[in-house]
Length: 223
Ligand SMILES: Nc1ncnc2c1ncn2[C@@H]1O[C@H](COP(=O)(O)OP(=O)(O)O)[C@@H](O)[C@H]1O
Ligand SMILES: [Mg+2]
Figure 1 (cartoon, helix red, strand yellow):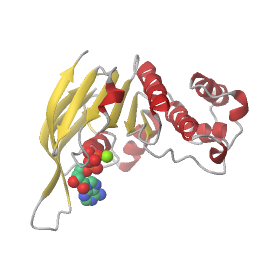
Figure 2 (tube, protein in one colour):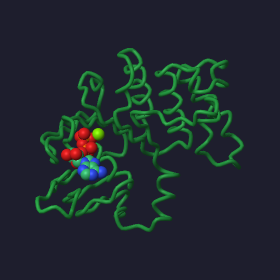
Figure 3 (cartoon, rainbow, N blue to C red):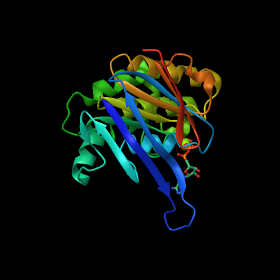
């Protein structure tokens, strides 16, 4: 589904010394499965994920998604792609503080979608939230619960791809494993990419991409 060709990303283009956050590599990803991207801080993990998800445009190279180079599409096409095909989970949950859990899940959805509420409730309960917690605002929920609400929000439009950048970094071990189990389950039919510097949460991945200094140093394909 994704095919990356000769991708480079240079930040700070005006300085004499070029800093390659991504330094010219190719990568092919399967249509579904749980993909772990691991590597030390600064190795380019987030940059790669942002280039795949169109949040950033690489300096060079192409990113083919279902055969189409998504580095070259219009702003409108990019917006549609993110809205219809992609879901995002970040280290911080970025929930809207004055909205309750359920409304936070619904916030990205189409207001005309009549089934959205029942689907959102289903996602929240699948993720282990109790009915009484649906009406609570983020400040009244624990960190793990907030992150699960953020995952329910990312899943609310049934995206084909979920991009998760350090989704467990602010969680204790038990919640980190819960979150990974949820993402694993979702990846049975969809593609889920998880960036982390914590190898211990990646036991169950179908493919492990190791990054080092802007390049891919190793790929373990267990599919
Ligand atoms: N917006 C930016 N401007 C300048 N340099 C950046 C920016 N974002 C990341 N970098 C640099 O690019 C490199 C890769 O960063 P990043 O993709 O965030 O790595 P990781 O997610 O693996 O920690 C790092 O050296 C980082 O300092
Ligand atoms: Mg990062």
